[in-house]
Image (cartoon, rainbow, N blue to C red; front, side, top):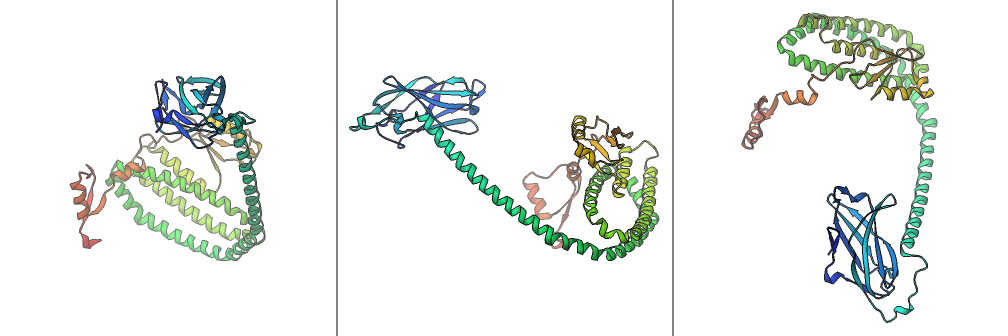
Length: 412
């Protein structure tokens, strides 16, 4: 049973006052329990000691601490050095933080019973608290040695992986890239032809249908399209990062660069025509040139990222960006035209002119009034079986305003 500490007083049950006989060692334990918050102060960050005095002899005992959400439990494991003398032992719990005493319990007492051979017991050469400290130092030393051994083994394993990569994986990858170059050129030409067909279909059929759909769907669909544009920007950035990794095989693919570039320029021209058609179609929906500037900025960002013309770096604040630019290694990574984005919508974004960051003329898009993906998902219709719908209805879980498409069991 734990000894409760209430308003600093120790509520010691009668059966717990006798803590053992002189000469006992690591047999008896006593637990003290107190609330975690006292007078608005969280005591869980404090260290706790047990001060004892018997027949004029004082001692300091370290207490093991465990913390839960609302209480602190202190455990006293009674050692031989704690009960060298029989009699009435005064005890008091002391708590302190950063070397300064902060809190004391009220004093109380426990009893140490005499043993026949008590006079033969010699005191420990070190006070009990120093003995425990020495044990902890020894334990930490053993843990440090074990950690050092583990680190050595991991370093050896990492070196083995690096050697395997350099001697086997990398040569095999280079050979695979070289073997695939010709095939990729043919595929690029095929994709360019397919892109031309898609662009023609888009101009003649898809774009008129999309314009009609946008006009019929209303502003909610426009908001959803804006969110999808943001997602497309992120995906394009991911594609840009992947493209940067592929530059490692540039030397192997150099022989086929001109042919691939010609097909890529043709595909880019068709993509530009399609992009212009998209902008013209949106203009039919909204005649204002100032409308949806954030979408146009996202489209320009997608085009720039797709061409691999720049890299982008994102910072939480302007100060974070300037701190990052103080490192010469970071500056060495930058190319003219690279973008430096600040997440705060109230702060300008920047681009690198080769010597310093310059403000981008376009304003950063403010997405405050746009729907989030979670909100859009919450408005989308749900396809559900009649049995599941009736269960929702019975449990009062049908969402007001939500559209449910009910299908019969044999339609699944």
